[in-house]
Image 1 (spheres, one colour):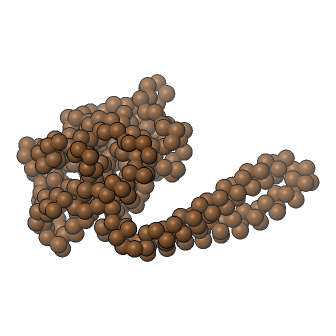
Image 2 (image 1 turned 30 degrees about the horizontal axis):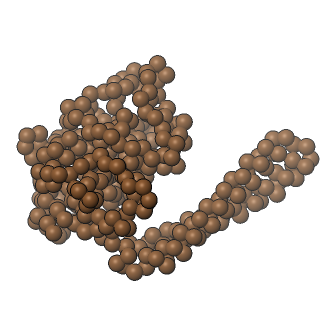
Length: 329
């Protein structure tokens, strides 16, 4: 099973995380209410990344030898290429050292299964569609988290914008028109803090224009599979019919399209449970699925956060607080 933890809330001193139910409860396990989580693959992925970086360094070392010979012969472009390549190579060597430290720490401190348990499911209602009054999907799972394990590195309800999209390009994608004011502020630490819930009615409204002048509302998500991506809400309610081992049901969803024809999918399998957010620090929707090729989604579906929080989670956790301060370590 793969998925993403979408957002967090507190009840008193207790800390909870929210994802989609189907992330932790596969369809073959049924759809009954629940009230009260591939470590080896992770280690292998660290080693694989180290191997890729070592191969890249081998190629860069050959380039350095070539550029140095040309630079010593007076080629100024080669001198510039030499400096850039050496800097790139040194950065990759530093990354390898950090990955080796991470591998050693994971192997030492997290090999025991109990050390990898970060919480337990406390509530997972059945997955249902066409829930009144709006017809949205209810696909949610609440996990009570182990604060001792989480708090040392816990940042709260933030989206890590990641290294995949360079900051300048990221800002241009969010607000592509120079004649339209940008309300998106790229954080220096890449951690985009969320502060408010976007009303569901606003999902159908644009807040910007693309390069052609067409109205759009851009959104962000960071998921387990595709990491950070930017997409666009379709501006209409999307009516979906789902088929699974649980049967079929109709539902109304917030729908997100890829940013453009060249950007790739907004989500793939394994991204379920991620939070879809807006450029003005809004919680918009919880990612619950998509439609398209088997390995990606032409359309990504999400349950509007306003309904999910106010009509689903709050009745079950009346004292829940979505925006809260993080204690200093």
